Image (cartoon, rainbow, N blue to C red; front, side):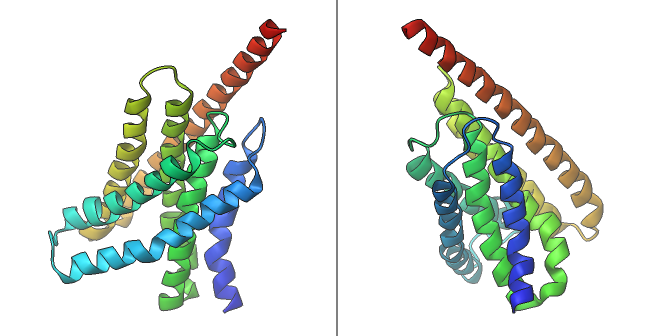
Length: 228
């Protein structure tokens, strides 16, 4: 049991630590990051219940609906909702890169709990493939969501557009990911290039967010200097 729990939890914590430590200015309060992580954990069971009801009632029971609506839309919407109503106005969210930290935290909380339940049901031998596919993909959906939330909070205009993109782009990427796994017999030939693209896109957003935070810090410094 201890081995299984370690295998289930370790990938999420490792990825969260990675994105957390890339914050080059004021690192986020660890208590707020942990709280956000656990919000993601607590989302799993209600979302699984909704998905179970939809499946048993055979509501739009197609590969496309299962991938884009009942998985991607439900999961990404609730993550986005938590970030908007719990974190977005929080005093700790004080630079653009912080969106990535909190986006990764809520997503990895969700992915870690999902991973624990999956490995309990199916065995620890699936831990490696779960780490490189579902856990890392959730992390990257959260990174991309967080990037646009950071843009929304610290851009002088287009805030609503960025909030919209923070929801829609992760839904589309998540939907494509699930659709490949659900609908393709030889899914491995499609999912590997998609994961490479997803990592490239996620790291591109990390780099851009760090530049935005650098610009934000310089702007604050200049304003502080001028106010003296």
